[in-house]
Structure formats: C-alpha cells, structure tokens
Image 1 (cartoon, one colour):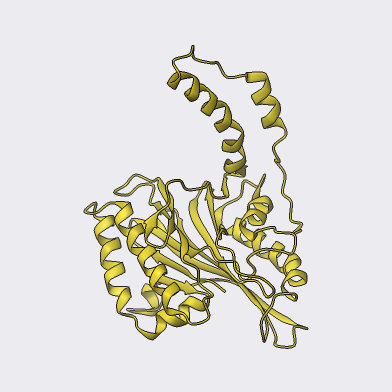
Image 2 (cartoon, rainbow, N blue to C red):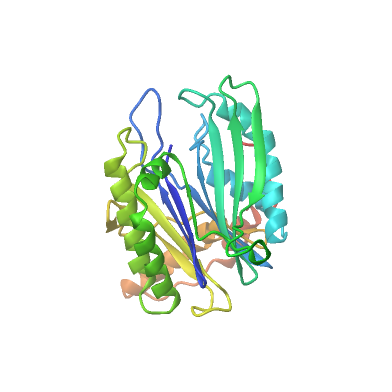
Length: 307
C-alpha cells in the first residue's frame, strides 16, 4: 500500500505521496512517482494514487495517466471522466494479480482548482474478496457543513495503509492546516509546508508495523492562478525529512501537451549550451533541425493501453 495526503487551502493545493513499491517475492523499492500534474483551460489538478504501484512490466500508473490524456485538450472534469473510463477498462486485468488477502483496490485522489474553486475528487476501483467482481466510481466530494445549501469541499483527503495510522490520532491535522493558512497569507515559504509534510510521511513510515509506507516521498503543490501567489507551484522529493538534491520531473499534461516529454527533449541541448559557457567555450547554438526532429517524434495522441 502507500500513503496519500491532500490539503485544500484557499490559495493552494497540496499532495503528499510516499514512494514505496511493495512486492510479494522481493524487498520493496522506494523509487515510485505516484503523482501527476494536469493543467486545463479551466483548472489545474494534482493526482496521486494508492493501490497498483506498477504493472508486471514496470509501467507506473502516473505515466499511464499521462499517456491517456496526451493529445486531449479537454476541460478538467471531462479529462477526469476520460481517465476514469480508461481505468475501468484497463486496470482490472492487472489488479487481480496484486498480492495480499482480500480484494485489491486502486484509488486515485485528485485535489484541484476548477477556476478559482477548490475541488476534491476520487476515482475508485475495488474488487470483491473473491476477485471475480468489482465496484467502480468517480466522485466529487463535498461536505454539507455549515448547511447543505453552503456545501464546501473537504480540506483534507487521505488514502492508503498510512491513512489507518493517521486516523488513530488526528492532532497532526490542526498544525498542518495552520501552516497551509500561513502559506496562503504569504507568511511562510512553500518549503516550510513541504518540509512539514515530509516529516509527517516519515512519522507514518516509522509508525506503521507492516512497513507499507516508505521513507522517501514527494510533496507537490499548485497555487490559485488569480490568488496571492499568482499561480505556479512546484514539487520536492525527500529522503526521510531531508530534501533530495535534485527532484525528478513528474508526468505533466498541459492542455493536451505532454510537458515532461517536451522538457526531456529540450533540456539535453540546453545543458550542452550551459556546459560550454561554464567551460569558457564559445556559446553553442541550438541544433534546430535535430530539435525539431526529436519533437516530431513525441507522442501527440492518447494511448490507453496499460502494459
């Protein structure tokens, strides 16, 4: 299993995901990327998941979700519906082989801004204990407090085996929400919140008896476009409570374009130019023909096949 925590602030949304992949026959690995960014014309979302960490061939669901939405320039909620239908079609044959007793489950937790309004969604696929049937849903969450006429989006979402540990003692919630409010007022940095979440992940890692939550994690955040921070966001990888020196790119779809793939093509040439400058050599120009040829090979159509 794993740990996912989402926080919905007035000006920012946050998602914490541990990086552990557990296996039946060999030790766990702590190198998963269980997070994806989605940007559309009407919103921005961070998607994290618990359940299937990777297929038998090593495909991570975050990469698959990116492939499903590549080339689809759709509104936010329509994008989530497309993703849900693809998941319903592709995931069952992979999930029946998941280790563990009872019925396997896969849950995608999505924190988002739809326009300026914060939203919380999940896409859930849960098998019966005999693994012969399953239930599926795609849901938006609201709370009817203070009244049903003033329904609000929950401030928190949690999932995975680590959620059981966090539900035993909920004192962590108040300090986390207080820190996010301070960030939303511009009083603390994004890394103050990210460090706090990494500390929370490490506490869960040390506290769960089955070691299903790993010591390494990812913290991702996005800001409201018209808010205090004027949009933007970021992500940070951690080992325990220490920030990793470098953070890998995360799957990102922006208005149908695979941003991660685009950056993967452009960055090597930019790095060569920087290396030449540092060495005191004449500045190299971009090889436009090579760059255009590589960009032309990038996928620009959806691929729903989960291999």
